[in-house]
Image (tube, rainbow, N blue to C red; front, side, top):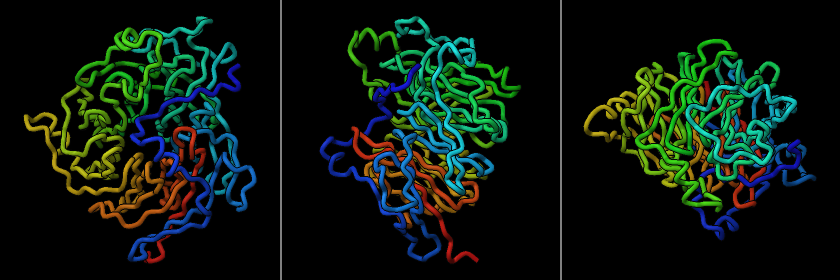
Length: 442
């Protein structure tokens, strides 16, 4: 029904001039490219690539894959047996076997009369549909997949949609798909607020948080029961809710740039290890918002990190929070307990334990399973940076097809997959696969 739909969707502010995009856009980093740390304790090698820009590559490990259309994010299953890629403009999530790179399945995010019963009839919190399609069927749409999160020990994969395809100004409720990872089939679609850019699952297994880029809100979903009874519960406002009616009236029939008209542009988020608090990065305006989960309320915003915090990562012991700042190009390390405490104190400023400049456009960050390394997708520089987690010393970096946005580390720490989405119709349409080696390991 929606075959051939290809509507350009903004992802987030690029902060890069068009002429610079033209100069820095590149594709085809040579397979076999390698970098290593100065002491030789880690090597990183580009061993393969999935791409949709060269149908006749010279290297057999450079795979042409037409399902790779503006790949936004990537995630390994907890057992490491599958890796999923969100193809934003392809309205699909693709599952691969990370060992053989064989394509396991393609999950299409398109809904019509044949499968609309997958869509929950729960209300989308208190949102209204402001952009009803001509046919009046708000649940007949294609969704543009952005981010992913697992729940129930890897049984369910949650995929958020930037918007429903007909909602050009992203004013309507969007949606989040729940995929059964055993069958790779969508089993439920829950409504959300506008532009649920990020998803976060609580460690205690009770909550899934929808982080709404579109209007300064966070939606909580109770997932403690079986899938049929997942329930949208609370909508929490971070400081001040952005009025969508005002945006619509302000622009009239003109296209609204939701990369800029997004309030605080809430994005990366993590629950604390005890599931008591949710930390959310405010890419616009700065700071990290702290939410008291049990009281379902916004506590305050903590400062001390560089502007435009985009992505957060929590160490496996729950002690440290790593913050990547997009425009600022920094990665910082904070004490998790201090971030929470400062939200309740008059002085909302935390002090980073370490901070490092990695390059313009620090997008997704991820920790190695052993907690020793931090990997950073450096978007504007088209690089993958490797930092030491203890003091954030930048140990090495390697080129990536432009412009990298998402990355994931395999559960055994051997592989890093990086998605290159592209920008302004240049670069991108690529997933780079790096092998991590430890030649000095004993």
